[in-house]
Image 1 (cartoon, chains in turn cyan, orange, purple):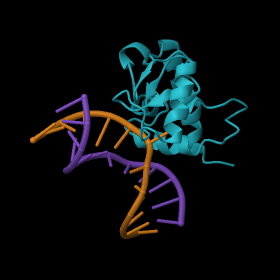
Image 2 (image 1 turned 120 degrees about the vertical axis):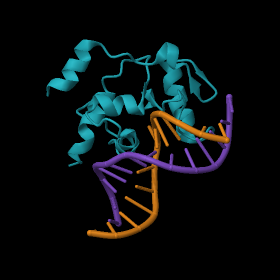
Image 3 (image 1 turned 180 degrees about the vertical axis):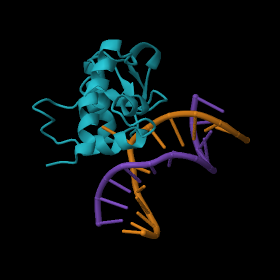
Image 4 (image 1 turned 30 degrees about the vertical axis):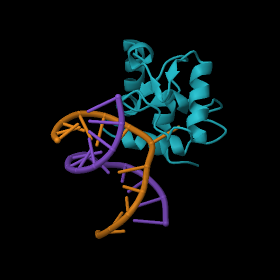
Length: 117
DNA sequence: TCTGTGACAATTC
DNA sequence: AGAATTGCCACAG
């Protein structure tokens, strides 16, 4: 069993459509933890390898508010994240992603969905 | 209970 | 544009 606190976060991350990215604060907000962006990082670091609810958690679609990958450039995690993003047609320049073009803009439908629980 | 930590964010220089 | 500083607060030990 894992901490329930992270479940909402993982599920929210799973809502991010392929080819899009979201910043930590955005996920925190949607997951019901406004202002707790740092919690997202912790939650993602504890994502089960097998994924969540039978589906993988696309942690690579989560970046910081500056539109950058939050890993040291050159690190293994960094490369892995960049690869995943590029596979999903997200342009990564150095350690940056153009938020203007690739940031996820949740629909009202999805917002309501995440609020209803 | 207290303390250190953190895959952040906003501000400032 | 990039580095340093400060605020944030749940979590882990």
